[in-house]
Length: 284
Image (cartoon, rainbow, N blue to C red; front, side):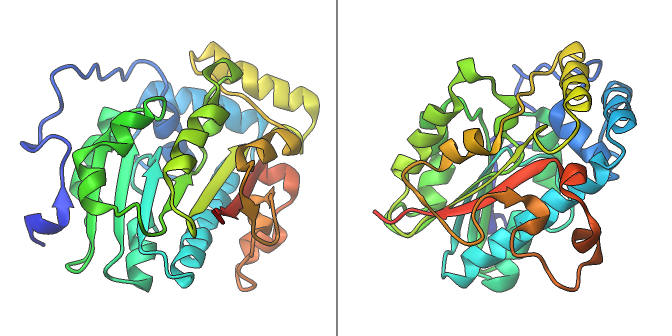
């Protein structure tokens, strides 16, 4: 592996001096790592995640289903000939990362990862390495600042916005309240995409489960100092405004073009998954 196919937001490998690494409070990326069976989390993350699992025992399985959706959607993008991926809200690296799936299909695929958690940054540097033909970069930035992501040197160097790009916002937008106006923020990114690009999106929902359980899960996150916003099918559809959803549309993540050989997806219920996923095409 050479330095030419990996680009760092901080070139010396250290964390930025301004980063305040808080391990005493839960973080969504580290809780998600816990659900996936990872080890890159802290007692505060595990305690908060364990409370969610107590309310929704299928939370780990639902997280794995969300991860499988990501793999299927990236493969679909590759089948369309897309070779460029912008993955915002990357999370701590796990199996079948975006670049692994994309570059398995096309070794020259280029992936720009974006997250703003210092632990994610550290692990991304160590693990998210691309093929010799392709390139992979990481940007330490916040979804709320589209200009810093779209105008970043790594983005401009790796992604050609005259050619189709797959934009991934997987398990991200439910951490933004309505006052953050995530729909308007997402529209800024979609506006920058050329025709033929894809939006790949998943979003958590309490709509598919007992309302009381859904409310208690949301309250658990709130009491842990984390914002989470469950949205209905109609509300999640709004994120795809102006785009053309590909079949089967916006559905629970395990129902989006499932692998017929995957028993886990086949046996899961909608309540257990508790999340919608969809892929949409930008026509013009």
